[in-house]
Image 1 (tube, rainbow, N blue to C red):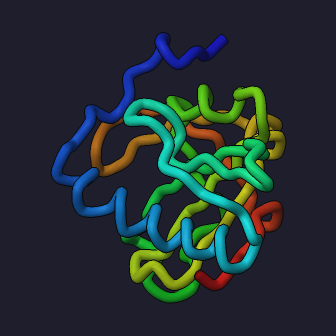
Image 2 (image 1 turned 120 degrees about the vertical axis):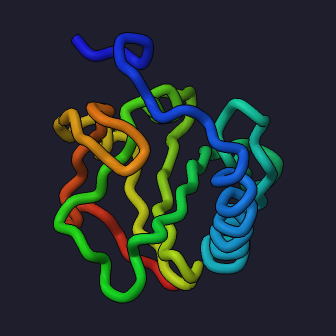
Length: 146
């Protein structure tokens, strides 16, 4: 059985975080507020990226990632979500993951229940070898304009 602690994962990079985290969260925040009508707050430093509420009651959470390899049309048939993020998909309220296009104009989103039902595979990437990922078919993701 794969657990978050039983695998190696990409080391934290302050440079990548500074370059991507806030711009992607801001784009998704505007969408959640303007289109879905949610009140949105920052999550805490080690928790989910955004906390969503309606009429003062927390209704769910959002995890955000920016995809620099998505320049025009999404270039893959599957979306790979790092298994190390599993802790965000088992919280007390629903969590949605937004995968944001490089230019911050579009996103694919998928909910925690769908993510947790998808297979996990070990993949190499440019940051490390053998990290585990949830493998999400693009057909189960929703595309939105940010």
